[in-house]
Length: 104
Length: 433
Image 1 (spheres, rainbow over the protein chains, first blue to last red):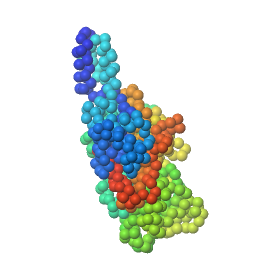
Image 2 (image 1 turned 135 degrees about the horizontal axis):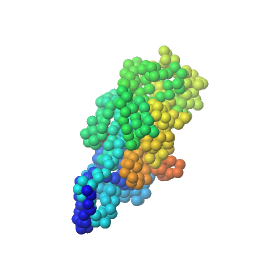
Image 3 (image 1 turned 90 degrees about the vertical axis):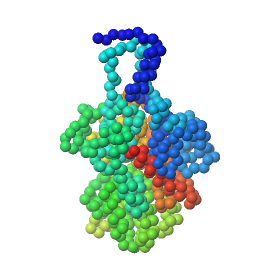
Image 4 (image 1 turned 180 degrees about the horizontal axis):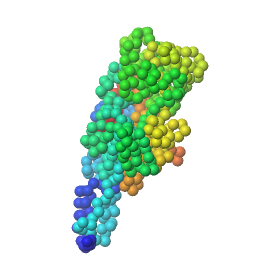
């Protein structure tokens, strides 16, 4: 029953995009940014949307978040607990966290 | 999370494969296309801080995975903020959470039931009533149980009159009723266990908030802590707070000074130490030594100490393949047994399971713990840390974390008390909605 058809490359690429959008994820790969970012959600809420007194960080620009986080780390921006947390992350990790929440 | 943003962070490994396979420009059409098998079946047993979080994040990371959450109770009553309930600062309703949204929002199949047996070799578990279920991966998040043989005279029946109140639920109400019924001038005795145990600063927050209640309602009363340890979590901060807010009201007796209790006379509510004097309380809150939750024992997931050894990168059991143990029951390196720790482990475990089912690489784990305690409703203190995995297991990242500063301003303490409430709102939403 099976027959192969030869199809131009562009059509194949278009089909691949369609397939990737219409089918659920077939093999999800969790990124390092998601690994780091989801660990913040215990305080800042799922996807950075906080229902209470802790600031929401969802959808803020990556540059802004990176700047704030580095400010907490240097002590330039005063904080209660963030200064203690952020000392646990490298510049690269801070960038990934900032990008993660910027994309939410 | 929007579709677009998810694509940014959860890459479609399948797409790359599909594209390269089609590089030959051969595309099978018609009925020959085989739909990839769904992402696999995961069962999570226990819907607390670890289990509820893990179930939700598996579905967030990969909606193709089928997730069933099995929980004994209709609603989960949290230990965090139960100390505020004890003294009238919160309603019982506000510390109770249902599972409906996990079904509605994430498509998790929530089953109310008790697991009686796990057959790890056959990847099968049995529910009370003998229904069996198959899994590809199993997550066990059973919390703690008590060592009823540790203190002479204290057993499961005894906790009805001398509550532990160390699991949220009816015990929490029992202790509150006793505090309310106590006469002014009474003595409340709290007996914290030795390490390791659930929520290391919890007994001292409890002492603080009870003192707050007594100061306002029964000011001639006392709180006596008879401790099985010589030091405790956030000790300096607690003691400074006690001195400031409740001078002379809270007395702490360390183990080596006669605080370690090994017997109770239930009829008199009298506690006997290994050495030193006996103490009688009007209200006694005895928190017994602990072990991993009963199911972990039944399933043979524990070591000789009664806790569950795991691969600290993935939380897969060191005993049974494809079975994962998270939360208080697990041995998690330097992480404490806290709700935040269990929440954080639930996410790493979710990532590990999704990666193993889809055959993709798991990113290096990163863990966080943030733990607030209330010295008074407007006086918060915290301890925090970031953890990663080294050859020795989960270790605190050097230079990260630590305690709130000593001698901080009232404003700083108030802010941390507000953040404690904010934390509660966020983490319970992160688990249940």
